[in-house]
Image (cartoon, rainbow, N blue to C red; front, side, top):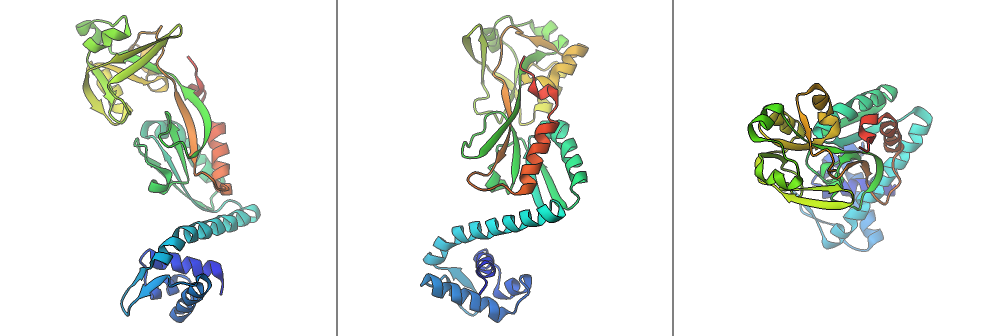
Length: 300
């Protein structure tokens, strides 16, 4: 019995595939799959699947084995892919996640170049502003702007970006200009609805911290929408410098409270913890780090 083939068959059966479907996918006869499972059960000393003529279900022992079996098969597949990559170039599937606007501006281009350099890869780039877990989303690698909610991932910090408080000249003409963070409570504030605490903005000045509770008048789960609302005289927004600095230079937006600093947002690459990263993940990590634009590394 090839134990990897047997474990792979067991995992697929546990995921709901039939014996005949597993046999076809592994290019063996159905009796062979049955023999593999029986041999696994002999080695474990317990029934793994409760079978009838029409269906099968995991036993308690099968459920205990399943998580380890998934890990073993995944590690073997990654090791085999790495060995093949060393001889033939990078191959396999690679799924990357990134925030929508940041991904469009700073990730899609480098990923396109990476695909050109490694045509043997099957790559998927998913843009989503939600903080979805890598395992939950089926991702190999994720670019995150801001502090990750799950600290168990491996992280590589790429840079950081300051944030600006901005509003349009039209809005300021109608509502006045705040001179202190506490004045923001009297303004129409535009907030990112996916922030942990969207109605509190924090600033520092000469080491002193100012925590301001605002009354949001408009919220969105997409920073580009908040920029558009600010450009249309709808309120005050707190946005990444790389998103609004061109508007400030062109006079479309005005930077407010310039002597008060909002917390910078770290830009990080997150990978799955506790495992050897496949060569394709390591290669993309190095590529993205090299391609990060200077605008993201600003400190002021």
